[in-house]
Image (cartoon, rainbow, N blue to C red):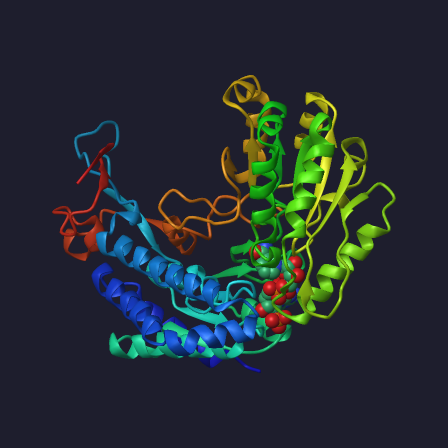
Length: 481
Ligand code: NAP
């Protein structure tokens, strides 16, 4: 299929939309949020039936989706996110006069967004990627995920209605359905200026490679696999075996383990390994089987477990066997650190509620594990303050390996706010400098431009001398309003 018409329309819309005021863009986003709320009695059961996720979970996700839309609306209405910087001219400077230079962030252009299967609302049609792109001033060509086609279409209609009600041009949002070939055509289209993706490592890496093979390579913000290690230290674990087992199992089995922040690896000191394994097993016994998103995902889960079952280094604490094509049962296996260190296969993500317990003998073995870890979205360290205080080297190393380092609680449950970082070093994402959750996700879809000696009347409002937007700016090195 030829997508020229869609991209041409998106480009025309871009030339208009990028200059629409933050206030008007915010009104547009708020219309989307209100539109989603007004469809909730249809949307919640629809998304639930298509994804196998319970209505309670979808209700929560709808709240999160409209909450994040309103966060972006507030951000762009306030306006300081554009990082305006002004260096005034100095014609008297010798030997050469200094020009007036003003820099800010401007929208990239039409963006292709791939919806995720595991969040039919919050990372889908009007999810964080679409909304942060629209907030920055970029039109979105949205590749729907086939796991929830009708919910996706309905939200697409809500966005299209908000476009009309806001008197914006059509090309600002386009909902595209199709398979892998469709996605590839969208990535290759010369008018596309960036890609956002959430899904598997295989899919994300293929799209990244394709985008880099284009005559004009473009940025790909792909959020892919992560095993989100939890590192337990001796004193903390010894004093809290039962409560930590409960927290761990709660996080592991949440949503049948279908979260990118699901903890798939837990490091345990050998002295407590046996008792912790028993406590976890006891908690797991209370967990009922849960349906996975679709049969393909359940099949991938059981196929990954079956490959691991052939590995002689693993001791199984809880085995999960497919009793039908969709239900997932949690599983847990144990491995010695020295064996884990020998084979990178042991840190591959198994999407679902499986975790590997890595048993370490001493600090040097734990440090070796940390050195070997691939890039992660999150790493969690459970330690008492005094045992953390003499492990600064370990903490320094862990900071290099992840986007979010936690010292309490569990990695599932990602706050949507200003300080959130959801994105880590490769292979958890293709660009560790960005986040796909939280207010600063907007920066993925903007680039800096410097305007030199531009007449004040022509400058964008963010850079005009009189600061008509009243935003925070860095003026001659001083941060002020
Ligand atoms: P996926 O297979 O990576 O697919 C995501 C989207 O990318 C789909 O729209 C898919 O198209 C498209 N796609 C995949 N490969 C492509 C390629 N080579 N070229 C162009 N487009 C491509 O992810 P999924 O369907 O959500 O789930 C499959 C696996 O992804 C899961 O088992 C799990 O391992 C992982 N996953 C990870 C996360 C995470 O947050 N890290 C989230 C969800 C899933 P089609 O729709 O046409 O197939």
